[in-house]
Length: 288
Image (cartoon, rainbow, N blue to C red; front, side, top):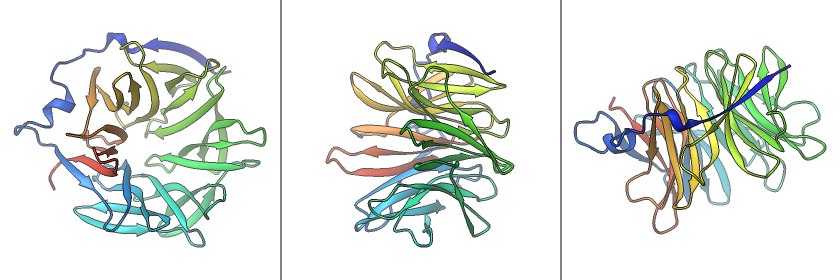
C-alpha cells in the first residue's frame, strides 16, 4: 500500500535574491531567451533535457505543431496521421513524449524514439497525455478513464502502473527523474489544486508557503529539484525549488509566467503571456 504524508513548504529559505532575480543581473550565466516558432499565432516551450534541447508546440494556422529547439534552430515534430501534435518532454537520448490528435478528437499519448513512433495509452483510457520521460525511458502522464476521472500513470518496461494521490479527485503525473521520483499535481476533494512528490512508495503534498497559493503544475529534475506553476492573488507565476531555496520565476515584463521544464544545470523551459495577450515560449538558458 502506498504511504502518504503532507508537508507545507514553509521551511524553505526564501532568499531575497533568488534565481528569478539573479538571472536578470549581468553576473548571471543564465540568459532569458524567447522561443517562438516563425509564423505561429503563439508558442509554448515545455520540456528541456540535459543538453539544453527544448521541446514544445505552437499554433501554426489552425494546427498545433510540435517542435524541438536547440542553439537557435527549430525542428518540427509531427505525428503521422495527426494534425495536432504537442511535444512535452525530451530526455538525454532525444526521446520525445507528448500527445497528438486530429481536430475535435481525443489526445493520445505518444513516444518518438530514434525516429520511430509508438502510442502511450493505458487500456480503457478515453484520452491520454504523456508528460515526462527520464533517461531510462520511463514515462509518466495522465489519462481519463471510462468514468471520466483523471488519473496519473507510470509506463515502465512495457507495463502501466497507476499513480493516484489517495483521496484526490484527479491526479496528474508531470515529471520523472532518473531516480524514479515522480512529481505532478492533484485536485483534492474540496477542488483545490496541490503539487505532489511520489518517492519510494510515499506521496508528499507540495504546497507553497504564502496563503492563498495553489500549485497547478509540478515537475522534477535529476537532483530532485522541483519546478512548476502557482497561482496567487497577483496572478500566475513560475517557481523553482533548488537546494531548499524557493524562487519565483517571472519573465521580464510578462503578464503571467509558467515554468514547465527544469534540467540538472538549472536551465528552464516555459511560456509567458505578454501585455498584448500573446503567448510565447521561453528558455532560461546557459550560453553554448
